[in-house]
Figure 1 (cartoon, rainbow, N blue to C red):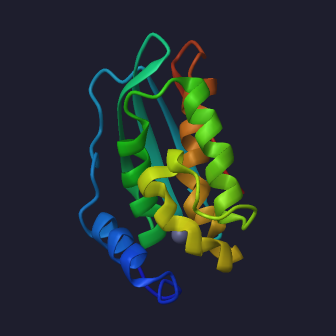
Figure 2 (figure 1 turned 90 degrees about the horizontal axis):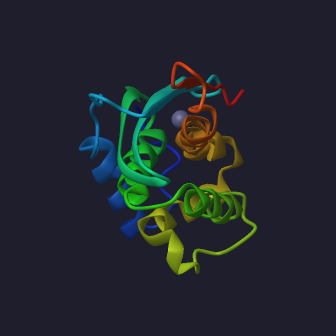
Length: 158
Ligand code: ZN
């Protein structure tokens, strides 16, 4: 884990990201997860497994395991927090908004982003975009590919 490259993210945002990378929320395996998927970012070495418990079309609970850089870990922490109570369609819409944010297509002005807005500074570091989207891609794989018989999907964002 290294904090290099975070210096320009802005103090408040940097603080939130460091807090979540040091004390990740929802950092646990999940008993009886309805869906799970693994993701790997070879550029940085980030690895993540996302667990989701669905109730109908709504995310009832989300958690993750893995190891990665500060951005990757804090994103997984904030993302799993943000997903609770969201439908699959809402999660998908939020991903589009977030993707626009970290690729510089939009400013952090969408209320739906909530705490995820702290990653707006990533747009200035194109090499780190995959760190900030790894858990997203993995979550989407879990939500979409999770319909397979074994309930697991494996994804690489390479
Ligand atoms: Zn990373």
